[in-house]
Image 1: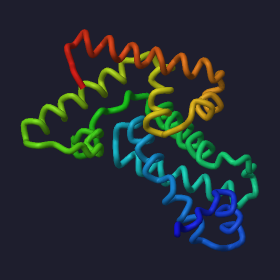
Image 2: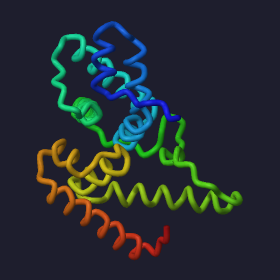
Image 3: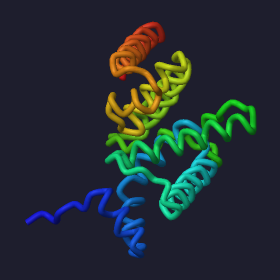
Image 4: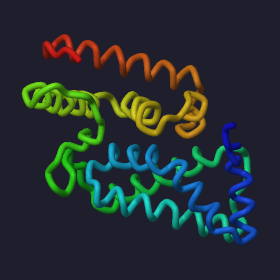
Length: 192
């Protein structure tokens, strides 16, 4: 028999009633998707951890101050907070994101792909680096939809709400992002 999943709303309600474990459950539920999204945007694991923590500090403060409006979209709300914190960071620092983490490692290395030998691993690493560069070269709107869909795991409806555009515009931007990526892959003779 499967264990029943407690809704975000119920976890929030229980947290506000004093059950700290419910907050931990919420964080655990979304931490991997949210952290991956932040890392992709910032390109620095240490800074991403700071933004991740700042996001949940803001979540906690908003919940405790009774300012959260429950609309059944807790995760989308948290993604919006994280996105705004990332934007604030880049406005403050006025610098372009770095492609590697604080140790100089490829950020996409967190993707676990079964590899048969070291040569395959090297080829895969090079392909991931090239793919990241190609994604970064997409127009801003296309890149944003692609990242929100594949790294933050948001639906197109959620993306349209977050970016304040219609669902059709979000779908179109994703379509053009994929078409542009395919063209660039062909142009650079890269197979994935």
